[in-house]
Image (cartoon, rainbow, N blue to C red):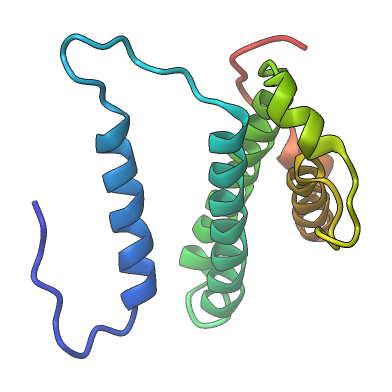
Amino acid sequence: MTSHTPADDAHPYLRAASAGVRHHTRALAPPDAAPPRPADRQHLDVLHAHLTALLHLLDQLAETTRPPHPAAGRLLAAAHTRLWQATNEVHSAFHLLPTDTAADAEARTCRPDRLPEGPPVLTICQRHLAAGHSIRRKTTPTDLRSHTTACVR
């Protein structure tokens, strides 16, 4: 199901990111004998980073598409809002997963000399707050309210 990419491909990094997500999805499928592994916090942190990068891309696409093609721009803006809702749910799931005490004890130890952005467990929250601030400038609270959710908090 791979397509031939032209030599003058204008979006090689986006294609590579898509290929990486497809590869990761296939890698998660366990062999027949092994039970599937549940997601862990590190996995959701990386997925959240991917989703927030997509949020920024969709935001830029919606802004540049809206003037010449208003209907397409509105649809991209709606997709941006729905992607934010998915990103928000991934962030919530991250905090509901149990922590690995040994790894997370090291992660919670703030070592500014090693990590200028703070403990790794907080990077997802910092990223989420920045993305949330960005989306709240362009949408209403009603737009951001999740229409469906898997669990009640």
